[in-house]
Length: 358
Image 1 (spheres, rainbow, N blue to C red):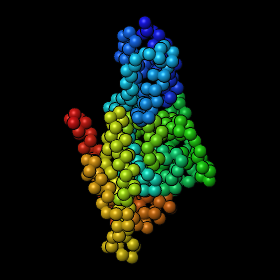
Image 2: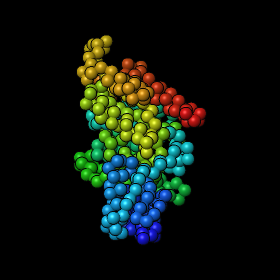
Image 3: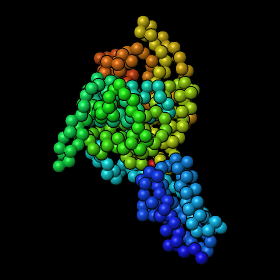
Image 4: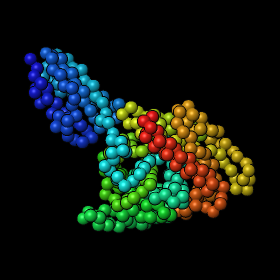
């Protein structure tokens, strides 16, 4: 006869790989039922990835069979712990909206879009913060002319906190402020995730309308750690219209739509939509294809926020650390201004839907 306490003793040897604590003392087990040689249970894990849930199930079954009986029958369901919503956010309660900017692959101009979105929001009078979470390739110090800058520490209510550096009205923290720009950042996932969370929890952000988070490209440990630890109010997906980029963007959207993740998609942005030479401003050359991201957003039923052309002045602005959205009455600044307007509108629409319970 298998006893309930025997099962719990065995399961106390199984650890959640995210917290390094056993699943019994962490209260991750629910609905444990022991009937004869049949054991039924539900286990909750922090990592929503399918492979993580499968590994947990395998570990539970292996331990129960090897320590109790190879003939024991097991019905084990592994689910992801629900993520706290922003309505009861304990992290950064003075920040109205925390929004991640993501891309399925690198090289699509995600950081360029992020920097101009942040500067454009500040231009409209919003209080804006920006976290460069692209741990392995931080580029925002360059885009805001802050290379070589180091944040200072401030004392707030008896606690020493990092003071973000302000540029063009945007408060910024980047891993690039703490590392040598000539050396590669070679960190394993847990260390990178810890560094990212410090920029949230150990910084003095103050009152903000928007805190934008420039994520690394792809879908990985850093994304999952952020989703588990910080209640995001939404995510913007950036892609080029090229099919290779669109395939990865689709996977990115689907990750944030996962049942156990459920981060609202604010919308998609198409970068490098067409090339316009400076000497022929009326001409458009669709180098990477036409309307690919726009069509994908329609197919996935997510909002489309706008198209950004491939023009030399955007690259030049990024290189000298002056976001293109701040150019005086230029075509490019008007394109980014429209993106900012669409972004704010969609945020407001999402908030109204949440209030109405839709």
